[in-house]
Length: 109
Image (tube, rainbow, N blue to C red; front, side, top):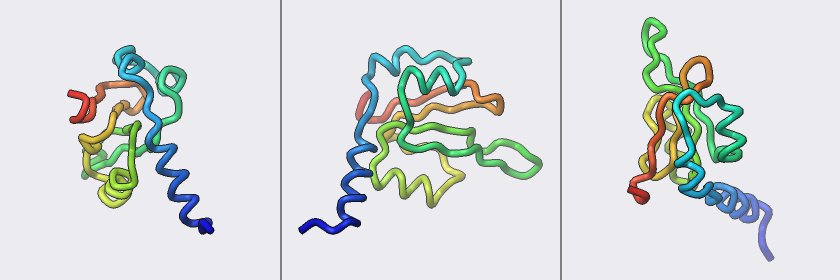
């Protein structure tokens, strides 16, 4: 018999593993809105708000990640002021919610 907690972990892992194709990511453009990114790539596996430093200076911009696993989700939750893991697709947004840059995961380079 499978326990409910195990099912939740397995379901989370299955959702986190669903990554849009590289062809979809190749269509990203600077200046796209969050709505346009969501229409192109679907729902991200995690979202991180911008991390602000002293004087309101952005230390780490807002970021959407695709392809998270339990390890990258835990790391993102624990170290919110760190850039995205190099194991996921990461899309960074400015204060107006427009794409500024993105990174491919190290395994796709």
